[in-house]
Length: 281
Ligand SMILES: [Zn+2]
Image (cartoon, rainbow, N blue to C red; front, side, top):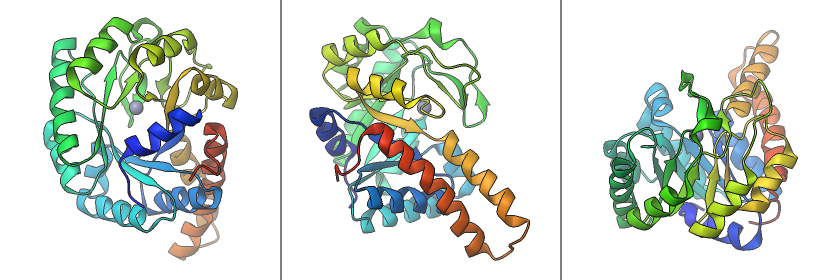
C-alpha cells in the first residue's frame, strides 16, 4: 500500500529501526525492491530524482512506481529525491508521490528555509511528507560531481533547529559526514552530531550516501537517531554487473531482467537487514 513517508518513519523512530530508501532507475530495480521488501516484511521508501525521471520518461516512471506501490503487500512511500524546484514538487505531488525533497542546501539559510516552507505547505496540502537538506552532502549526485570536502560542511545544530521550526518540514537530511556515490575511503560519520540533532529536533533524520558504508556504521547512525537510510549507487552497480554477465549468453529481455532482479534483490535484502526493518511491515 502507498503511504506518506512520515507514517513509516514515525513508527521506525519510535521502535528504533530505519526505513531503507532505495533509488530505482528502471523497472527491474523497482520490482526487485518491492519483491524483496515483501519477502522480508519490511516497509520501504521508493525514490527517484528529477534528473533520472527526465532520462527515463517522467510520466511512465511515476505511473509504474505508483501502481507497484499501491499493489504492494507492505507499506511503501514514493519519494522525490533531490529536486531543485517547486515545479518538480508540484508535479510529483500531482502524480502520486507521497513524499518530496527539495534540496536547497547550497543556498543561504534564509533561502533554504523559504523553499523548505513552501515545499512543506505543498506537501501537506496533499497529505504528503516534506524533506529538506542542511549542510553539504558531498560526492556524486546522479553522476554530477558536487565536489567539496563533506567534513568541512556538516550541518549546524542551531541552523537545523531554525530550519525545522520555521519551515514545518517533516524530515531532515543533515550533512553528517557521508557522501553520494561509492566511497574511496570509509566516511567519517559524526555520530555525536547525529545524536545532538536527533535530541534537539525530534523529527526523523535521513542519512544520504548509504552505498558502501559498513553495516556497523549504519547501525550506529540508526542508534543515534537516523530513521531513513538512502541507498542508490549500489543497486545501479549491481544491475549493470548482472546485465553485463547475462547478456553474453541470453538475449531474451525477460530472462535478462529476471537475473538482474535476483541480483538486486540480494542487495536489497542486505539493506533491509542493515536497517533492522525486517518483519516491521
Ligand atoms: Zn542524497
